[in-house]
Length: 446
Ligand code: NAD
Image 1 (tube, helix red, strand yellow):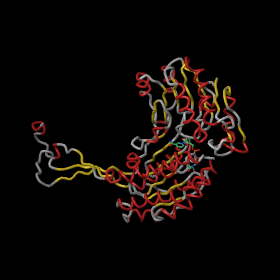
Image 2 (cartoon, helix red, strand yellow):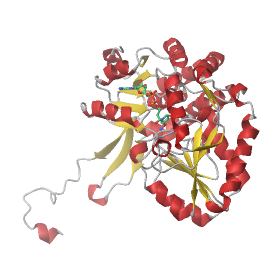
Image 3 (tube, protein in one colour):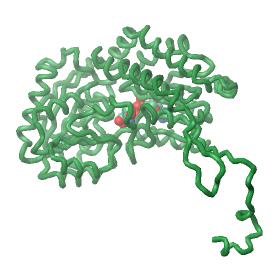
Image 4 (cartoon, protein in one colour):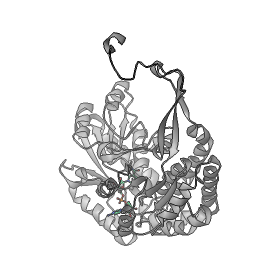
């Protein structure tokens, strides 16, 4: 178990405050990623069958860009921001000073086991905190490798990695942290929030949910199909912002389903099981859970699977009832139900009848339709593409309602791990007495 008193002492010593320390640690993290790129990719391959290209674009390359962006902007983000001083408080000046929170806890999920653990760490270090990080036990190869590497690179008195299962996580949650950043499902999210409430610790919950993709008749069907296919079947569908279900306008329903089938064939060929560009399901339990969804509709494409290899082909499901499990639970795997809608209004009603999603996708060439979809609550939205908004570190990333609370990436991560302290400085002179009691003649002064 991490000895928090050591981390607390390190934080209290002020070691993490200078930007030079933060820069040094971020540089060392970058070095770790560079020095052990092949081993890290091998671990991701072992845990999730991740193709090297995906490991690069969504994990290692993502983190390199994240660190570079942070290093480039750190001095600007951490400078006190002067704000206007109200006339009543003249003379004087006001500013917002970002202040590190202290010792923070980061609990990662298994589907992007590097990115989801280390990107919050980048933000925590940038903001000048000490951190305990716990990778998900469901991606054991990556967790074991990180457990070995992190102490070799990062300051042991300021950053600790703890590995283990739910029991270890529960023990960690019994301690007082200054912030808890959790990525994972909402069931555990509630446990985390409950534990945090004991110490009034603020939490960021990066959760999941059912992210819809709406395809309207005026969309570029071929491009839409290819981009849905890419966003859905990357990491074998185990992506929190993957399109979870499709709402396709009646007029192009058949055409779109055909285009999607062609896109899958184009991306993965007809021997998907042997295609190294397609990942595997994280474990047998999740594989079985996914298999259970097949009976909720008609398999319009795919459905091939092999429990021994944890292989599950890209699968399209049609004719699913709204009440079925596949339409009620987050799928988090390579199955995609397709629902026919009469028009956009019906699609919006269906989306709004459910909890607020983490992401919402719309495929259309109509500005008016985009404007209507923009009115729908969601963690993030992306039009005429999937997932790509993740690449923009200038955008916040986080859910709303059931899909989470709080945000990170770039400056938003920096502020999540900072207290934005209000500071007003005044001089002792002048000191007019109109605000002090006795309040006699108050009305005359108005
Ligand atoms: P998981 O099982 O890996 O759990 C996440 C973390 O919670 C792990 O570190 C784990 O040890 C810990 N944990 C598990 N049980 C616990 C308990 N009883 N008490 C305390 N801690 C516990 O992840 P998961 O929940 O299977 O992840 C899948 C979910 O995560 C999906 O819903 C997905 O949408 C969501 N997700 C969200 C994001 C995002 O950025 N919003 C990213 C990835 C995944």
